[in-house]
Length: 149
Image (cartoon, rainbow, N blue to C red; front, side, top):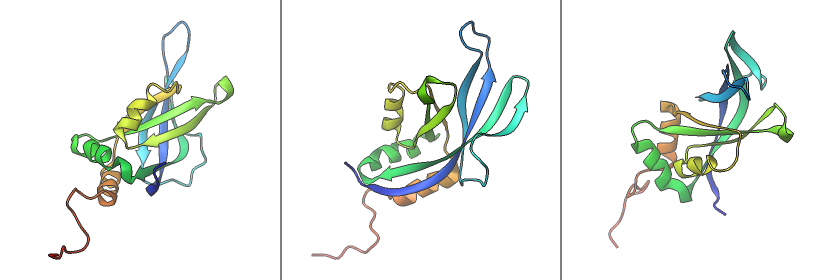
């Protein structure tokens, strides 16, 4: 198993919106990843409108692994880097549990096939992009000068 290279705690914001569907009356989707974890209780309502409610879902960690460096670089090089968010219903009920937040596009795509109840992507903030780039420097970069051997 790969070892964690770096971890960053972030906050997750979700949207619950009403939908016109004969089987379900609402749908959930991630809307933002906050650069820092706020001093707000999980599942706090941030705003409410007749057809839409925004919630602070809680804190999650983005874990970076040295073995996935190429995937992180691909995500950053894409021009519109994304963060993947997955949630699952607890015990088949209505309450959601935040199960995964990742910057690895390969892992993110695998989540879509995992059976999670709510899966989506949100734009990656410039601050998180910079953090990932600093933890995963470009190939050929070294923190010490190379000496001829």
